Amino acid sequence: MSKLPVTTVAITGTDDAYGKSLAESFRAQAEAVGLQVVFYEIYPLDLADMSSIISRIKALSPDVYINSGHPPNHVVAVKNSVELGFNPKIFLMHWGVDTADYLDPLGALSNNTIGVTMWLPTAKYADPVFGNSTNFADEFETRYGIVPDYTSAGCAGTGVFVQQVLEQSGITPPFDDAKRAQFKAALEQVTATNLMGPWKFSTDTASWHVN
Image (cartoon, rainbow, N blue to C red; front, side, top):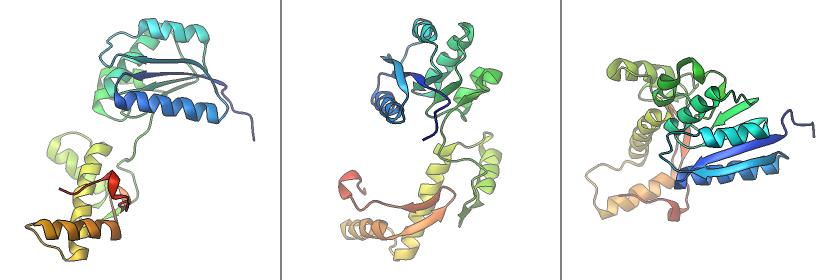
């Protein structure tokens, strides 16, 4: 195994189920790949100033700083880091770095920060309704005046997938209990591709339900 270009990491997360679970996952994965976690803290979801936290992190000089939370939390973390001159080799957020909630408040300060998205308009997937991801993004921006993020694409993809399941199974609305059961069974059988990529539902019925 080659030596990692970074060795230490600081991790913070918001005090909600989403932020805490991600922070715990980041810590576990960082340790699994051999990084030393030198700082770990969960902070209030509505914390408007992270200066105290960032100051303590800066004093440890970690190679990587990971903030697990939501776009407004990332904005605070970046602004305070810039104000305090904290500039790690890698500044990572889980999600939201491609959304207006993150980009608009930060502007150029968002440069060189990285995060995760499950979809981009450049994704190379064919879609039976929109044609492809680029067409969807263009139509969405024309109608709503904003560039769609993965949430918008996921909602559209869900609608297309439901249509694909109905078409392939031959089930037609309105739904009664019998048709709901048929639809649930069809979900477990159909694999279809749309602007979010190939979709297939888990057969573990304990993890989802159909209304």
